[in-house]
Length: 178
Length: 92
Ligand SMILES: [Zn+2]
Image 1 (cartoon, each protein chain N blue to C red):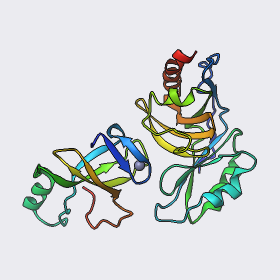
Image 2 (cartoon, chains in turn yellow, cyan):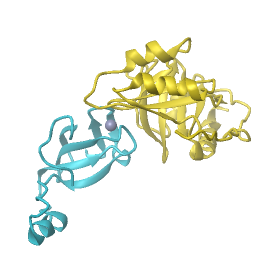
Image 3 (tube, rainbow over the protein chains, first blue to last red):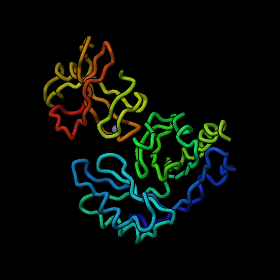
């Protein structure tokens, strides 16, 4: 692993806008995103990951397809904290630090499902997609990882280079509720 | 309709999230010869009715799926994970 640390500047620093009435949009702190790559045939590591890494934050461990998870949080991980996670996963899975590569956006409000439904075909009904549920999907043409973090709140994780574009799309999708 | 595919991991998703990779055909041995490989790479039957296809859930779980699809009605009959179901056919 490289000792070289990449300098970060916020991906959405210039894009933060006052929240519309129906859906509030927040650029989440660029803390940490750890991608966990296990085997699709391997054991379900979510409980183990929760026990070790979730701490006080709910929904910190998110499913991302068979044998894959994301561990997210608002605070940056030190090199040694990341190494501890990576070492703890052996031999079941590998950890990839994606903190610099993925950006999170929080959408909250009564109209949040209506807004998201403009871009994704995922059934966002609370009964079908309860709090804590995660999935990877398209929002418009942009690939995102979607998590319901509360009854009327979603967190969207997106590759850093797409963050500003996605933000602009979401603003437009929100216009009728603003 | 093939415009909606029920991924065993992600549920019903629009066709735009997937990449189709063509019919499920047995992969020839590496030393099978030019004719067998020409057939495998270039020749397809274009059947009318049910046949099996590889689809990749590119914008979802990123798993390879084997789908039984009716080419007339676009009805998807079965859909399962290619590797987890221990498909004997190799990927194209
Ligand atoms: Zn899928």
